Length: 342
Length: 235
Image (cartoon, rainbow over all chains, first blue to last red):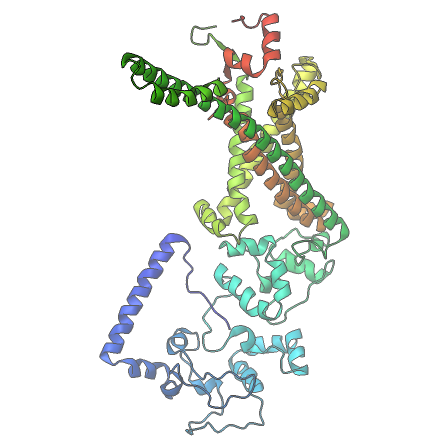
């Protein structure tokens, strides 16, 4: 499902703003509920009244087919914010009629085809591009193949201007739309600079569709003229050699050219060996110094104990030899310790 | 020698102090702007990156710092050439930072001292760990600098070599940077500042001046040589 994050604002200022917006929304929502205004707002978005039933989160299919979701819920506020909020439900859900308890529908007709044609009605150019894509080829061979809503979602599509996509949007498209099927490709690509920068909010960094296109979805290969053209969109000086940069390598470079793998192993090994030797040397040095410090502390303590003992001895001496037994037991112990320290 | 400087030996010339200061500051800046990109998915990366004001700013700081660092290195290379060619200083011997046999003996003696099997070695002007730290910079600049420039100008790089070398450059740049940061944190900082004799900071690299008493304790062979050569007065 396509999720377009609202926030184009980064950082703390953005959070505060988001907090204010959320607080306002909550207050408004509360006011709407209290004033019983919900049917009216619903009506504005949904003149056909579909959301009367479908706006209920508990509205489920009584006997769902295996593999079919049970929920028939459409989040009214999500839909109200979507780019299609002005559309009536039946402009996409064509042929649906309100015949409660069950919609009459030609079950012979595949709903997927209905969806594609519904989208085509407004988005002809995209439809034509899709028809030539490998996604469409896959779909026409097997209905499991992706159609428009597989990537774009359905009721929550937000307005995005091409070329002005936010980093969040790009990241979420890669993860949730492309990565839904091409998980291996996403997992490898996210360890490259483009996605790392993207994940840190750098919206100019390329995501899947910046290289592979939206509706024609190209497979790109090193050394091909097509790939050079794609790279040149951001790297004007790119030549054929440039396309031999590998975007989808495993993090351990197991699938890379052996030279790259060797270099990776050599430098990782060097990193570990040198740091281990360095830290071991430091630790051994440290233990010596700690023992020296402890020795100094010990000598200091010895001096303090010696001083206390001398005071005691003095007081014993001045008190006469009355409590000689207790006194001797007291000062034999520290004197032994003192010798050891000195 | 002024009255204030009595009891001190000037170990580092202003050039050395400035050179080290530039190396230190640019290194810190690179070490704070680079890793958040390498570890962008870790919990701390986002915060550190927003501190710099985003990837673009951090990249700019990283590149400017790298430029100054490499500039510092180039100036030092010229300085070295000047010392050898013009001043005709010897490449070997006690005043040289190049390795010699005594480094190995000092290293062994140091370990004997660590385990109470002998006295602390009587060190010369440059100890083996100082020499290692010094020459590590050459390795680091060669590896991190070259790979960094390759990544900075990727299309220019691919004019010369295949694009796969950008993958290689990324590996080298990241691994060597982590090695350098780890070495500085765990080894260099300890040896130079956190040892008992200098804790918590040895100002000699910033002020250039070292108390002669401290010098005598730290580097006995050098002290004896300086006394012999009449450069300092014996206590």
